[in-house]
Amino acid sequence: MSSTFDAQNIRIGIFNKEKIKNFSFEVKKASYSIYADSLFLFSVSSNNKFLISKKDSLLVLKKENQTIGEFEEIKLVQDSLNSYLTIIPENFKNKKRNLNGDFKMQLINKELCLINMLDMPSYLTSVVLSEAGPNKNEEYYKVQVILSRTYALKHLNKHEEENFDLCDGVHCQASTKSLNYKHPTIINAVNQTRDLIVVDSAFNLIGAFFHANCGGQTAETNQVWNKKISYLTSFKDTFCIKTRQSTWTHKIPKFKWENYFKKHFFYP
Image 1 (spheres, helix red, strand yellow):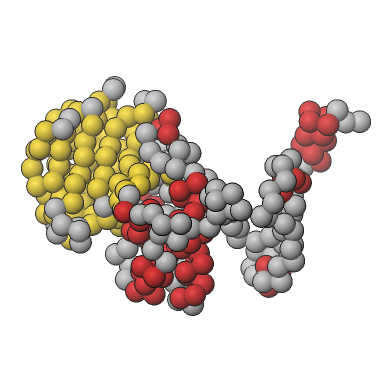
Image 2: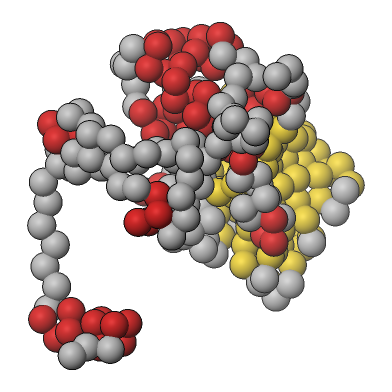
């Protein structure tokens, strides 16, 4: 199967779960061009900090304490491929991100929506670094890249109603870390597996599900989704029983446990 999956761009919803109220951004390297309602405003280089907030049905763009204007849509476009910036949600300052690519801000269902637009290789590098972490074997990274590419293509319409393709959290695939963390092993894994995907016997993209820990053995798909998936069968996984998530405890008050069974299973 020959295609150019890695040539396409992908739209990622940033901070989608947090529902940010406003955020600041600062260019850290090179420069960005700012467009508002499709009109070019100016180019921004490093050490310039801006604030974007919402007011009624519009976005307010400020530089320090000076209001630049109110707009329906604001775009940040890289002036060069090595441009990147820091984004800090004002109500979640501990979750600031260093990100590259282009950005679009607009209001979706009255919520501030921040969309990161980048090419597939950049997205995959971010996913693998976020999901797998640094300092792993390159062959392992290659497998994760292929699965992550397959998953992304399979679920591209997951957030269509919100005007982007995938979110940056575990609801889709975590992609909270940027290319600007230099990890050549991950970048090599992306480049060496270019356009590779996994398909089933009918040449359809597989689900490519992966998890942090299965507890020692994966479940049959019909036990999870009431549907048998031919390429996913239960198997023992001895790696999972040796990780930090392998044993855990969660306490539930007895009345909540009973109420759950009363509501869903007509207990007693």
